[in-house]
Length: 114
Length: 114
Image 1 (cartoon, rainbow over the protein chains, first blue to last red):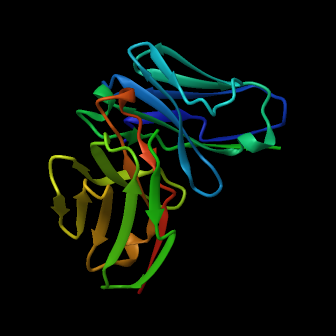
Image 2 (cartoon, each protein chain N blue to C red):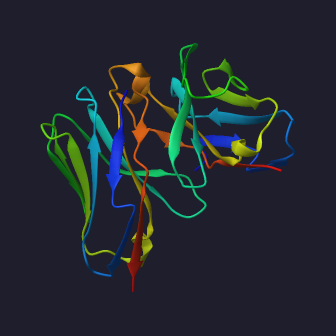
């Protein structure tokens, strides 16, 4: 089942480059998220996006910018990539901010910055 | 903001034994507590969740208990099997506020030895 799909699955790039990760959900959910999972497996929320309202985690550098063309898509653009950005990035979605459905994750994008 | 502590970080049991993972949370307004299982190289998947109007929920070999007064909740897996080996994450959210952002614990790596 690919209810939340993200591309690419793997992304290898050099420091200083700009890259994007795409995410789409076909569950009809109204809220989408980006989570970062570091090498220690810690899952940390980066953004949530609901009805065109963006909630930004204050610890996320402004090099990271989410873009949502519609409620089924939430893409993540990263400028000037750094070594510390290497991680697995998970897109997720839910309905009405978890009040009516659990969080559904995509399969992740493993970003490696060299 | 919410802070979720999870223990232990690693847990090794013999097949057939029980496993217990414990979490505490800081925000008394939190009212939704899911548990996710993440197998190696895969996405986190919901295995069970509990909302604050119940104290216990069971699904076959998996059960979750919630103590709102003490602000802690636990995952219990009985009759463990090798396929239960994975990283387990607890999480907490106040889905009535902050658009329901889930805050995760740091995970427990469960190993079930045959």
